[in-house]
Image (cartoon, rainbow, N blue to C red; front, side, top):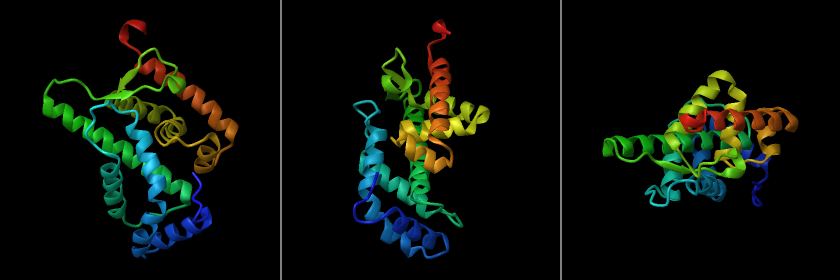
Length: 194
């Protein structure tokens, strides 16, 4: 996810300035990272059902609003910033799905395209709320595995980028990724196959 205009170090410095109370840095930063945020949001939304009404720009705007509401937050790096954005976008989509589901009162669950190369599942779709619930359960068992899934699946981070954000080796990310995929596959499989 390299930005050709600004280095990771320059972005990190802007984030640290924002952390130290210079909130105008956020206004300066967002236009510079907008394209990367757009790609991140697009990765989230391409897995959604075709008739999903939340658009990429709206998802970015919602994430921006939530980020601006953060107080006394210590940004560690550019990668940390995008990891937090990924978590916010996931929460926004889950909240959106829950709201739609409640509004329909028993209507169809919100479906998320299930990337078979990621989870090697037979199903082509998974309920985003069920996936979020499963990730929450995984987080209780193994926080790092849940973070690996969030960064790899939702944000589209490479193994190397995930390792950088988590401060672990690439081989650790590979191991956690394999284990988390197997666990989630089991959790999200239909009852009759368990």
